[in-house]
Image (cartoon, rainbow, N blue to C red; front, side, top):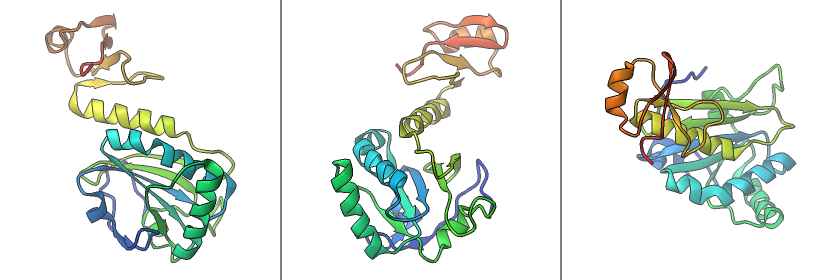
Length: 211
């Protein structure tokens, strides 16, 4: 199954270190970051899982639940979590799915045979409360993920869902935004009382509307 942006992601029930998880029930009305790992006790992933544990308050502020996946079993996960906590100076505070049967990996197209036919690639899925896929980023095994970037994208998605703006290159929360092209400039000036700067007719900037 190939998942594309805007698709409704499939539900599943799978074991985790926190017990069986029905994905839809677990997600509730939250956004979700699902991120996959090729195996337990892998060095790059160990650093990633520790960082996400430290960032969990930032995800919580944005109504985002985080959940990891690795193809090893629950018993292996428990041992790995001990290593993560010790080496990364944290306490893991979210579930890791045990995908030994690769059920979720296949559902979410996490196996890329031309890279490695035997293991899941390291993909991030951002899923909104309507179960729609909003972002995927797939990384090679040698490159650790940038979870500050994941938070930045979630900020952009949540902002642009609620206001008629887009976010420009390297945008971060609090920066000026782009007025969407579908709104004429005169209408934009009424809609965005903080001001509209017209750089070109198609490129108009306004201060972030919810700040």
